[in-house]
Amino acid sequence: MTDTDIKKGLAGVVVDYTAVSKVNAETNSLLYRGYPVQELAAKCSFEEVAYLLWNGELPTQEQLAGFTAREKAGRALDPALKAIIDALPTDAHPMDICRTAASVLGARHPLAEHSSPEANMKKAIDLWAAMPAVVAYDQRRRHGQDIVEPRTDLGYSANFLWMTFGEEPVDEVIEAFNVSMILYAEHSFNASTFTARVVTSTLSDLHSAVTAAIGALKGPLHGGANEAVMHTFDEIGIRSEESLEEAATRAKAWMDDALAQKKKIMGFGHRVYKNGDSRVPTMKAALDKMIAHYGRPELLGLYNGLESAMDEAKAIKPNLDYPAGPTYHLMGFDTPTFTPIFVASRITGWTAHIMEQAAANSLIRPLSAYNGPEQRSL
Image 1 (spheres, rainbow, N blue to C red):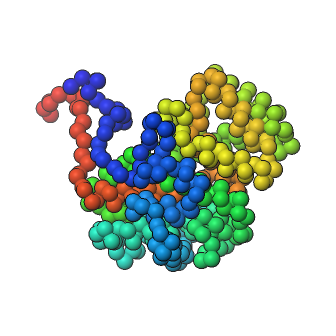
Image 2 (image 1 turned 135 degrees about the horizontal axis):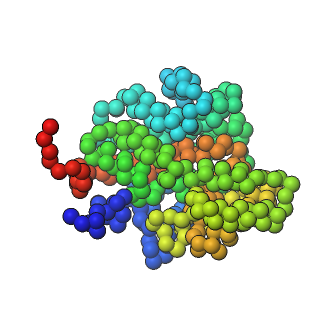
Image 3 (image 1 turned 45 degrees about the vertical axis):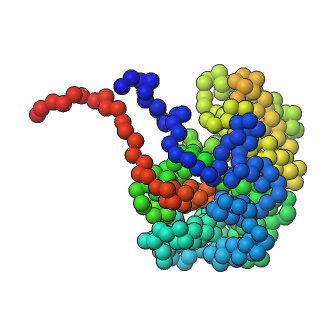
């Protein structure tokens, strides 16, 4: 076997079929069950998109009403899980809390040992409903704040914001957050989704597969880029008194220096997209609205300065994490909470793939090429 036969990182290897999503190269559009994600983000709620990913079609009004009622019934934080979260250190990364929560919720689920299609669908909805309370409470406890109980008169995105900040969000913020949740929901055979499918292929349970996926998403080469974007902004320095132009000039100088030092800059480039991440224009529009809403033009200056410098030097375009990071920052989320928000969204895509894998399963077990010592004796 030669080096050319080895596909490091499984690059270019097609391992299975999926009907959940694809990137349409001809239109540079990410499709969920055939629908361009930018159209879904413009016209649908996150609940409708979750239903679509799990069922293959958008819901009727009657189906949506029943579906949202099931989600709302599972929003409260399980007291036993709250006690476990409280026992974890506040300096642990919030992704560790999400990973632990998924495992605990699985162990406590009444259908823990059942993996029928019906059981998996119920577990998927329950986990999706429960995760915002985990993410919201974890951020609050780090600030010495009490839990905020969920409200059933609010949609998924609005309730998520309510439980995090204890204030009813305005429509503009709800809309931007809803857009981000839809855009993060699914992206084919990425590292965490493939991890979930590998675990599922062993006939393990849904919560184990999601727990493993969260572990994969924690890695900065996959899910931590939205956090890294804000670390970059912080390193440059966010100056609220600064004009857009002044901030852009400083950001461009920082980027030029970072590239000269061959630093890795997160938030740019994507393994799948060759002509720019198709989700960015939609998320950037949401960011623009948040910048206008909060009156923070200096953030747009930093954004524009970094983007233009990277484009001039490397012709590399931003990915979804680049506009998502400052959007969450403006809303008031702590930077380490950004990737847990990703978890709450991507649960829908992960579990869609878990159910798809289980429906036509084959154990995922690749081969390796051995390059150690030949057989020898003691």
